[in-house]
Amino acid sequence: MIHRMDKLRRALLLLLVCLLLGLPSAAEDTEDPAPYIRVGLYWGDRALEGANLLNYTGSGYMLGYFDRDLQFVPLMRTEERAISMLKDWSLYYVGGQYVSQGSSDNIRVGCYHIRLGSYDSCEEAMEEASAYSDGYVGFMNGTWYAFCGSYLSQSAAESAAASRGVYGAAVTASSRCVTVVVTGTDRVIFQFDGGTETSLGVMPQPDASGERPITWFRGYKYYGGFRYTRRDGGNLTVVNVLEMDDYVCGVVPYEMSPSWPLEALKAQAVSARTYAASQLHKHESSGFDLCNTTCCQAYLGVNVNAPDCEEAVRDTSGVYVTYDGAYADTFYHSCDGGATENSENVFYEAIPYLKGVRDPYESHVTTGYEHWSYVYTADEITWILQNKGYKCAHIVSVTPTYTEVGNILSLRFTDSAGVSWTFSRSRASTILNSQTYNRIIHSQRFTVTDADAEQAFLCVNGTDTRISDNDALCAVDGSGQVRSIGERGSLTVITAAGTETVPLNGSGQAVTSDRFLVSGSGWGHNVGMSQYGAKAMAELGFTYDEILKFYYSGVDVG
Image 1 (cartoon, one colour):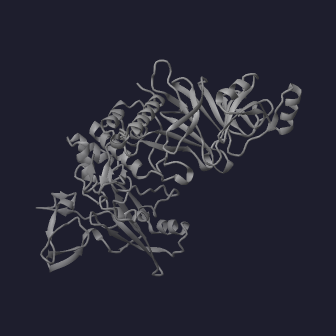
Image 2: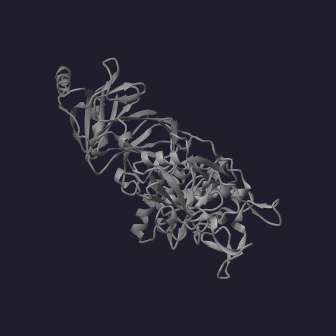
């Protein structure tokens, strides 16, 4: 297998030849439109003082930086398999990590150094540094330097220079500097300071067998390289820089069970890849594209042995979901409970391909969330609203409004003083969540009814034939139109007294009670692809593109 550095050299050589000969480069017609991605691993309040790397497969690292196109530019190589990147600060090695709090008994790495001189090349700087047992090189804003030693103060560095007879200045770097040491020691091997423009990059190298490098970092294994930035001069923001498909390999087994059918895994791979492409630069203010949490997509590297997931990623490499020529926002969720939902009824913005669809497939598998329910007393609802900052009196009624496919659209709570509070879209599905009462509304597919009212059932040809799902049944409304009973709105029905217009699903009708039954199905926001629905469709023989086109309306897959 050709290592990335070799591929880079070959690509650059090919590009140079093409430019000299006036030929089109291969990159102009075959490149994946989103080949690389920057994934934030630690940032903000979680930024690190020191970050350790260890080769799992591979041998040593190239130290350098990533250019604007995320191509790695090497500066020097180290054969060390365990290295740590530190903010250039006085740090202590405690419990396997470099931190700012420690004691004199701990290994210490200081931020003051003896600068031996500046040079035109890495080789010249290394030649000078090699004369000292604690010598090393640094690349500071485009200039090479040779250093020796690391000290906790400038005076300590000056005293050391005098006692050692070293001709050099005692210096410390800027607040952007990153120091590379051999893990578990105070031995510095490199310093990098690119100011506000460039950050230290580390690229793991293959061993003699040429096996693809995989690197341990904080208990997880990763493909690709790493970038370290001291944003605002603080701790290290750690970013994994890797190829898009390598990223997707680190998403699929954490977003979908690796044991599921291959076509479902392919649908997940394409959804994850497309979502990443559509969300590039989402966290640009923090210096990366996507984070590694469910804020974006769960990404935990390659810890899981998931050959089917990797096959799904390989088989769909370069495949995206597009709408009108642009990447689709391929939202997905665990299970829809019977119907997905229009994006504007959940996230406010109407997106043409994120339309609610009735899902006849999900019921073919067990999701664990086919049905869930809670009984809330009026006192409990009053307490929940009051503790969320709403100055309501005793709640006496709840008015639910439903969407065309039967999901909740809004909840209106009315108190004894006649004052109402209305919560819509996703807020309607979270307002009743309470850790105190251990109640979590799992999706927007739920109803609110009187918990003490006699349960009503739709029956056909006698009371022994109950219909559990009215979505597939139709009736003639007052204008003569055939309507699904599962739709919102109202129907005119024939009763013993003549005709009566009744609301469907109780939409817009106040429920007045001391006890309210919240009954639902599904798990997640109900927008886009149901993952359990994808599993069911795959088991029923659908292909991954058919799955995607069912859940994302009017899209292209390719």
